[in-house]
Length: 345
Image (cartoon, rainbow, N blue to C red; front, side):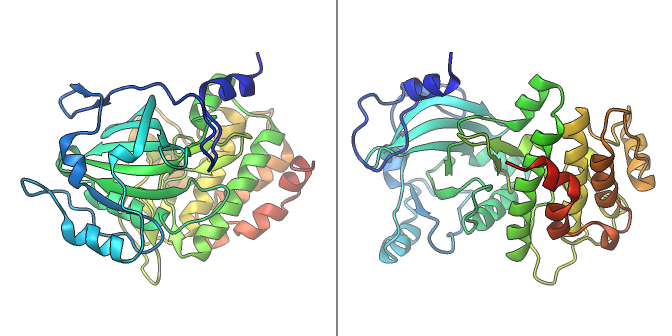
């Protein structure tokens, strides 16, 4: 059966007109203790938030007994911004489960527009000490507009939860597709690398370093196009040369492993690691222990299976350089012969 036909049957097309006859099937939105609630919780009546048309307000992680946040809501309303709450959405099936909550298919009631609603619990974010990551993700992703970056339309919160209103990517997680296929061929890999490179050029132009490019943070749109989905580790990089350790071990560049200062060139390294993993099915420096992985990264111990083409080897080798300044610039990635040849229509 045609997967697009199944998609059309189960999920209404995004539209601004009220011509949808069947809402997404209702599922309960869970409480923190796992008990489901089938309608908007009481505190959502006083929840606050906004669209992403201007600087996002600071999201409180702790609350008073009624959590009205009247100043925040009044501020957003006075700017002509939409103030969202849970009652604005019909909640559909779960799309995924994360460490701090779930993501649901949802439909905005007025426009009938299909979105992904990411729900997270404040207490769990505070307990894990990652509330700053969420604020950073909202601040950065709100201002990014690119076809290969998942759109953040807005956010809101109540006494216990924070909700992100995200673009829906119907074809799901790229990592699951990679697991299912084992590895990708040159044409598919080159297409993804070109799309990701274009998105990173845009990010770097906005002084945004992603710092955590990996298959788990990439989604696929309706036509199979790649979309960067997670900006939790991202930073604005005006003049700051950061020295914090973050990101995923297999994708960390030598300068971060060695606790040296780093800049946007960390994303070039991650692009090379990603290209390798797409073609081989596993990251290039994977080892049995973290210590061995660190060693291989610092030595740039890069070994290619025999089936990898000469063009792919050349691109990956030019991205995986120990010296950040020696890595192939993003504009030259798009012009690399292997990318050009394998992205021809």
